[in-house]
Image (cartoon, rainbow, N blue to C red; front, side):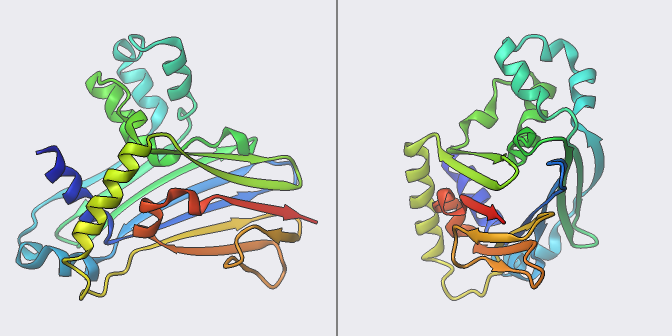
Length: 241
């Protein structure tokens, strides 16, 4: 049963477009936004006849700290270290729309920060929210990798670290098994990084990154499935002039 759930998740994820945008001001503060959008043409190919039979609607907006307040009794049961970890998400804003009628499935996570190092791994936001709501152990820590960010005024770093090699290997195997069945399909599954800086860019660690004409923005696009099989490939270092 667990395998089937993971398998279904991998198939669903492979039909998504993910865009991560970060804007950094001269003083080091800024904003980050992650948008996950289901590509309907891709999903329709994967879902087959069941695509037209979907009946689901959800449209919600919340700030993570609302969960900390509403489920305070559950939150206080966590260790001091776990509470500190979740409090890092307190200002994260979440918008989620899932409409089978409009055929729009979208998740948006955003945060205004004072320092780049304050940015949490936003991809875990919903996991932590559900943990607090249902009084679960920290399921987000079951992820097989984590993302950290750093910026010292000149060098920006996006650091991806594998935290569970065994789970990573399982994911690779599940993807390989799934994709052997869908090689004939034309799926849109992009993972795009868009980073804006206040100063000109001197160099980027990934040679595939496209630098804008004013040299203050980079665009870097990956295949989503490849990123999930090899998360570390999205690590990045940007040096400013």
